Length: 214
Image (tube, rainbow, N blue to C red; front, side, top):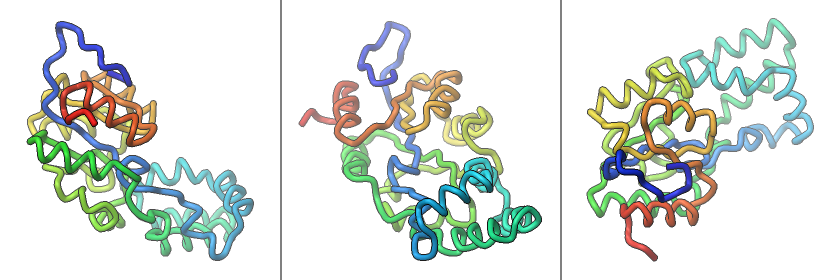
């Protein structure tokens, strides 16, 4: 579907919505976890030298935070120090819900639309998510990469969602802020939306007949 409301004759009616969490339902900015000790420039230096993005994806796929710290310690103790502070203070990196999307979850729930979560999130910290965005409690089920030890965009995690919750990908809409993840979902038959903000998403959901038009 991308951001278009066009449907061809082979598409089924939408029956389910699958939500990514980070920067879709829950805000995430890793620098917020370390800004009490490190400047943005220092964080950017750490992020580059530590390969933080790759390390974070491995954490999402089941690497224990302590293992990540040990790896960095062997490279440069300063990198390990920054990463340890990030992991210890992770809650500060996720300051609350993304504006507007919790309302959409509630509206979809009120209309009886099945909803699920498919999130790249460390198993050590995912317990925070429902407290940060209480609307997450309305989801029928959640598949967490850290618990499955498989992270998006690996197609296997999408298959876990489909099989566990008996979803028809062709009648499910997957919402994520990552084009790479959307491409993986599309390859398995999901209809997809690149999340750019709640207002744009509201218009797409309304066009698809999943919620009322404003």
